[in-house]
Length: 286
Image 1 (cartoon, rainbow, N blue to C red):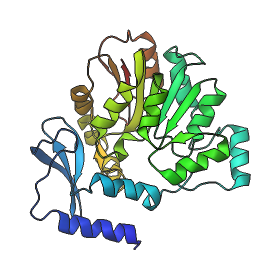
Image 2: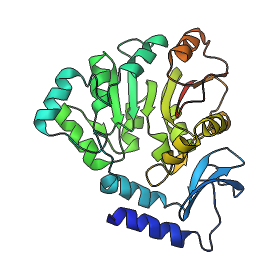
Image 3: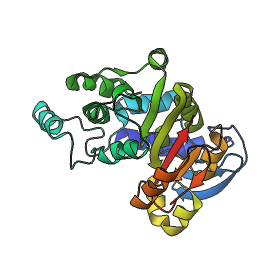
Image 4: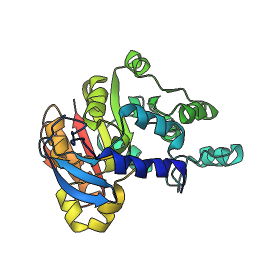
């Protein structure tokens, strides 16, 4: 068993004694049990609707983990060698797990034109930034992992690790994140941060695994696998509705059917699409 995993089990065993669950986003102490893995529980905050793991680490411990401890197979944490990177950049990542074609297509559906200023929130080592730039967008990246952000220099990218630098570069037309909110210590704060650097009329766009009831009921086995050491929180439709500052949002999935619905969405009302998939899409217009 790796050291990080061992520490996680010990934290789960010891952390539940004498402590009361507190929602990491709204600080409510009212929660109900949804699932369990060994010493850890997944709880639903009955105030804001967020699903969160208990016990959980401090924000400082989470940041430390994502510097070097976080390991996931594939291109997420396995940084490519120079030859592989050159091949990926030449192919623009087409056909890989990090192919951003579907997100760039979504920008087109929303009439976000090339030249728009995009914040890639949770840019990792820059594979998404590279593709957004190739599509003609002006991209700024933010990443909590210093080693992965530094790797972005090999792609000719500057990825910020200090939020104040992102604020100085604002405002943006789009704040985008892909599979980031589920890693954050406080997803509500992460959402508010991104909205704060948008232009009036700009878009917050995020995709992430979620824990909404319809998905949980349709595929509980798949849902059970989603949360744990790497995913300490799972946002839900209820959480988004309680967190976003207005009802100018589309919540659904990146499916052909929902893309058609987004194309006719007026951007000034709430629309709930397909929430049966493991991945949830939210589009919010500031």
